[in-house]
Structure formats: C-alpha cells, structure tokens
Amino acid sequence: MDHALRLVLLLLLLVKVYPTSNAYDFERCERTVKQWASSSVHSDSKDGRILKDLLFFLHVPRTGGRTYFYCFLKKLYSSSLECPRSYDTLHFDPRKRNCRLLATHDDYSIMSKLPKERTSVVTLLRSPIERVFSAYEFSIEVAARFLVHPNITSALKTSVKLRLKKGVISTLDIWPWKYLVPWMMEDLFSRRDARKINGLPFTYGNDSYNMEEIVMPLQEFINHPVALDIIHNGATFQVAGLTNNSNKWEAHEVRHCVMAHQTLGKYVLEVAKKRLDDMLYVGLTEDHKKSATMFANLVGSQVISQLVASNPVTEAGNDTLTVEAQSENMTVGKLMETYETCVSKLRSSQSKRRVNSFKRISPANFTKEARLHVSEAVLKKITLLNALDVELYKHAQKIFIRQHHVMEQKLLDPDGPVG
Ligand SMILES: *[C@@H]1O[C@H](CO)[C@@H](O)[C@H](O)[C@H]1NC(C)=O
Ligand SMILES: *[C@@H]1O[C@H](CO)[C@@H](O)[C@H](O)[C@H]1NC(C)=O
Ligand SMILES: *[C@@H]1O[C@H](CO)[C@@H](O)[C@H](O)[C@H]1NC(C)=O
Ligand SMILES: *[C@@H]1O[C@H](CO)[C@@H](O)[C@H](O)[C@H]1NC(C)=O
Ligand SMILES: *[C@@H]1O[C@H](CO)[C@@H](O)[C@H](O)[C@H]1NC(C)=O
Ligand SMILES: *[C@@H]1O[C@H](CO)[C@@H](O)[C@H](O)[C@H]1NC(C)=O
Image (tube, protein in one colour):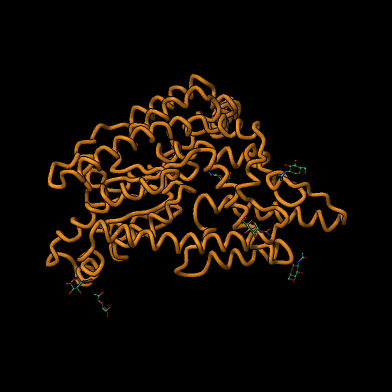
C-alpha cells in the first residue's frame, strides 16, 4: 500500500515536472495569457512626453539602434552616466543608482528591475519583412567571418576566446546573436565540408537567397524552430517583455502559448501597443531622417536641459566634469550635425565589414538586386509568421504621425507646454 501510494505521488510529481503537450492546451493557455495581459498594463502614462531620470533605450535587434546609441546617446551621456550594460541576463547594479542611460537588447521585462516611475522608454521599430531579412543577413555576416578557419573546431575555439576577452562585448555575447551566430556558423561549415566531399562541378544558380550549396536558404531559415523562437514577432515580444531572453519565468509560458495558439496573440499585441503609446519616443527605421530629427527635438533637447540643470555640487566628483564636457554647449542643431557625421562614418565601416564578410561566401551576395528575386511565396510566409509585428508596426506608424505634430508645435512655440 505504502509502495503504491509512493508510486502515485511520484507519478503526480512527474506529471507536474514534465507537463505533456496539454500544458499548452487552449483553455489553460488562454487563462495564462489573459492573466499575464491584465497584470501587464498599468495606466501611469501621465507626463509621458517629459523625460524622466532614467532613459531606457529598448533596442530591438536590426532596427538601426546602434546608430542611435553611438551617434545620439553616446554624444549626450558620458560613460559614467551609463547603467552597467549587459545584453544577456542583466545584473542591474543598484549601487549605480544615479545612472541615466540604459541601452540594451533586453526586453521590457527588465523594467521590473528599474525605478519604473522614474524611467522613460524609447524604441525604434522596423517593417517586419525588412527586419527578418536583416536578421538573416547579419547572422550570416557575422558567422561567415569565421570561415577563415580551416574547420569548425578551430572556429569555435576562437569564438570562445573572443567571449572571454575582458572588457570587450562580443557580438557572440549579445542576445539574440549568441544563438543565431553559432547556429549559422555550424551550418556554413557543414555546407563547406559537403562541397569538399562532393567535389566539382558546382552549379550554384544565381539566387543568393536560395544557394543551398553555400548558405542556408532564406526559406529554410524562416521556417526553422530557432527563427520561430527568436525572430518572428520579435518586436512585439520584446516590447511585451516576452522574448526568449526574458528574465521573468512566466514569460516563457506565455510566449509558448501564443506560439501554439495564434488567436491568443491579440492579448500580447494589445499590451505591446499600450506600451508603445506610453513611450517617450518611437522611431521608424524606414523613416530614418524624420525619425532622427524627431529624436533630437523631442528627446535630445530634454536630455541636454536635464544634464545641464543637474546640480553640479550634488553630483559626485568626476561625473560633474564629464556631464559638463558632453552637454555644456550642446544644442539640438549641433546634435544633429554630430549625428550625421557619426552616422556616415559608422555606415561606411559597417558596409566595408559586410562586403569583406560576404566575400567568404561568394558567389552568394545579399544585394538589393538579389532581393528582388525572392519569391512572393517567401515574402508572404514572412508576413504570416510576423502577423503581430505587422500590426504593431502599423500602430507605431500612427504614433509616429502624432509625434510629428507634437514636434511641429514645439518648433513653432518652443516655450509652450510639452505635448
Ligand atoms: C582543425 O584545424 C586545426 C588548425 O589548423 C588543426 O590543428 C586541427 O587538427 C583541425 N581539426 C580537425 C578535426 O580537422
Ligand atoms: C538568374 O538567371 C536567369 C536567367 O538568366 C534570370 O532570368 C534571373 O532573373 C536571374 N536571377 C537572379 C537572382 O539574378
Ligand atoms: C532561446 O532560444 C535558443 C535557440 O532556439 C534556445 O537554445 C534556448 O534554450 C532558448 N531559451 C529559452 C529560455 O527558451
Ligand atoms: C577623476 O579623474 C581623474 C583624471 O581623469 C582621475 O585621475 C581620478 O582618479 C578620477 N577620480 C575619481 C574619484 O574617479
Ligand atoms: C563651451 O563654450 C565656451 C564659450 O564659448 C567655451 O569656453 C568652452 O570651452 C566650451 N565647452 C566645451 C565643452 O566645448
Ligand atoms: C557584393 O555586393 C556588393 C554591393 O553590391 C559589392 O560591392 C561587392 O563587391 C559584392 N561582393 C562580391 C564578392 O561579389
């Protein structure tokens, strides 16, 4: 009897620890997702247009956020004002309580570690098809650099060394690249090995996005479980705080439920939209010129006055000096000039790296012309797989138009009330 009881208990335990597929059954999922959604929206958006003490740049991968970080934010905030950055599991350092800037690929769940009432959030969104192409190409670009190695063993050794280098943040440390790049690296090496074994002749065809002898075809990439987990609807999941990298354990259940039952996506979308509404600024990668001007006028101007106004006496030692040096004579006009020079330098070095990297997978080359040949079916599939992001992007476009009006008003009447 005792034995039987123990067995039953053990079985119950096993069922709990190893939930079978019905852990994601519809009713259960609906409850989980709805519960998450209702606990995720708080209406505390008053003064949403006023910069608070901490600026959190929620950097959705492949939206061009690097240029904002290096060419706007780094020109405004000195390093001493940056919160300890970690693109992985953020160990937010409470000792650095006065940090003013956090820029990371971490999703919105990081807000639970930040002083929420004193934090303003900004982000950039990009049209989903463009973002998927960019994620595919960038994964390959970084992975292809390792093809200088004779074999995967030697490539992996180097990548481990890169990650251990002190004081340097390698792309391989940063989510989502820490998953996407090693995956692509193994794939590139195995295709190269297969070519060696199979020998000549090769008839590669002329479609770079479908050149399976050399690189994973786009179609295979978008349908792979890794892409499903990390890339598709990535912007919505990131704004909702539900990415594969979320530091909240409930997030993973909610995400899996939404992936299993598409109709539940609407709850996540509503949360993400609401969050965008409450942000200090939402930019669009496609509209980069207008976005940058808007950023300088709506966010940059406030950062400048905030840093100038911060009382030097109460600031600790060297922070004062750096704050003054960065922003003392800064104006919105100067910020834009600085930004444009910086962006063109950054772009030219990025494009050199890209060309050099793609040489290693020649004749595959991801050019604008090559893209025109991607089939309608593949584009349709990407849209389908990113249905939430498509909707979120539409919403962001509406916000963008509103923001533009706000900026125009502000430029007409600089002393008027913000918003
Ligand atoms: C990989 O390349 C390294 C460096 O050339 C070599 O020492 C090693 O034997 C190779 N390993 C395999 C499994 O071929
Ligand atoms: C490949 O070549 C064919 C025939 O020359 C042409 O019709 C097609 O547009 C080319 N595709 C690409 C991707 O260049
Ligand atoms: C995130 O995705 C990667 C790649 O699919 C996977 O290896 C990892 O386990 C995932 N992490 C979580 C928490 O789901
Ligand atoms: C302040 O800056 C100077 C010069 O850069 C440096 O030598 C000194 O150690 C700094 N002091 C503190 C407290 O960080
Ligand atoms: C700001 O302008 C003043 C007056 O022109 C100048 O003395 C000072 O060096 C400038 N500061 C910086 C950081 O450029
Ligand atoms: C790939 O395309 C770029 C841009 O069109 C070009 O500059 C580069 O030379 C091409 N690379 C190869 C290896 O053909």
